[in-house]
Length: 197
Image 1 (cartoon, rainbow, N blue to C red):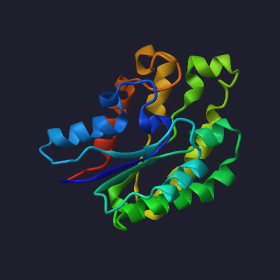
Image 2 (image 1 turned 90 degrees about the vertical axis):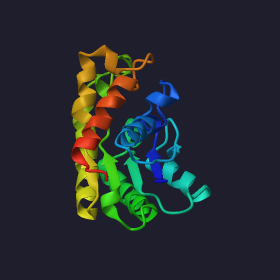
Image 3 (image 1 turned 120 degrees about the horizontal axis):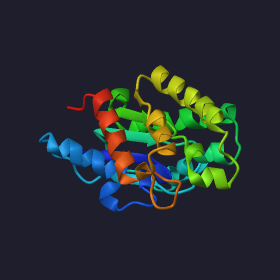
Image 4 (image 1 turned 45 degrees about the vertical axis):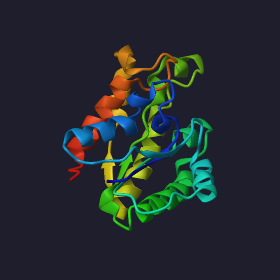
């Protein structure tokens, strides 16, 4: 039985969607359809978490054993709280190193997903923060650079997230978080980018 650890925030826990529609659940389902035997994902994620809060949660309840796959998607709340990409870098790097350690020291068993652009959503317009997409790009430049330097996989889902500006079916009912339809597109991108055996 293969083991999968998903680390993140609302985009990992699937705020606003049913459990089977969450990204980790859909990824496991897709891998099982390939005939692979995957256990239910072990998720450490909560809506609103920053890099610091994810690190604190891991320290409080460290996952045991080795995982065959680890995904990491974190940083949107650092940006939302107006922290800087420069401050984000060392915290993200530390979490990435932890993710690699959970994968038995194998960086090729770690997938980092880029931060989606929440600024295209109705929620962002209500907050008058619809022009912060370039800041998210700066955060993603950091996590991409760190991921590639560490030898892990990087999957860009930001372009997919920006389609929500025209495709409302890609958003959950809250007008902020992805729908199951968007998560399905993320899974397809991950499987296309990362040949998981």
